[in-house]
Image 1 (cartoon, one colour):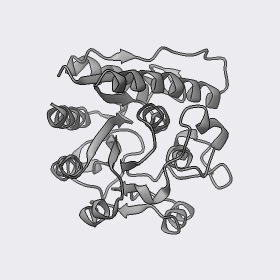
Image 2: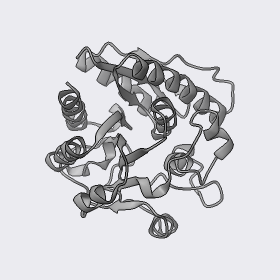
Image 3: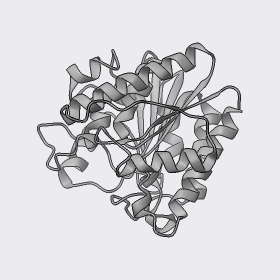
Image 4: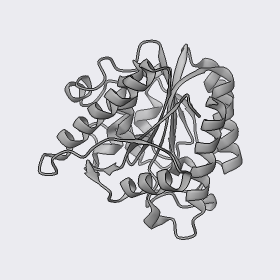
Length: 266
């Protein structure tokens, strides 16, 4: 695995080793990964500032990995780690394949939860938090260069927003995934593996886990399909919370997904 560079971002809402940030530590330890761990920031700073600064630090590490000819494999608590990963590999010509039960496509104007992480994909694609994104990732990724896969757990306003977007959709159990990949005009891609894309019957990744998604077998096959078709510039696994994983099956699934990425990179 000499060409693999694991990078750990063990934070949730910009705070270390809580919630989904704890899952990063658990997976790094279980897999025995010699990960480059992004250091914490001042916890007294506002959440958005903390998160963006952590993403900036992540971006530096991803950029260093690419410069050394290594593949950046990011393990992160939250999905807005995408800003640092994409900023590190560069958004020019980049496509995104985003596996998630949720769209993460809210904007500050329509969001009702107050959860900054549900604006990760909208920030990456330029419709939210543009000044903050620019601190980490100079240019957004256009919507038509994003495949949003396994999405299903949506409020009506969220469904309406993605349906009028230019995102390439392969919802629920990955219906139309092959067609979405074929329509993705990109020379290379970033693969975003939110663990709760997995159907809840296969393991409860976090408190937001939802029914109606793909099996682990289908998820792994979809990852293979991405590697078969594109140059993969970087990958990230996000959103594992050990507190929600009472039977350990989600951790097993996370290990299988990471092992598949490592196998394909090797």
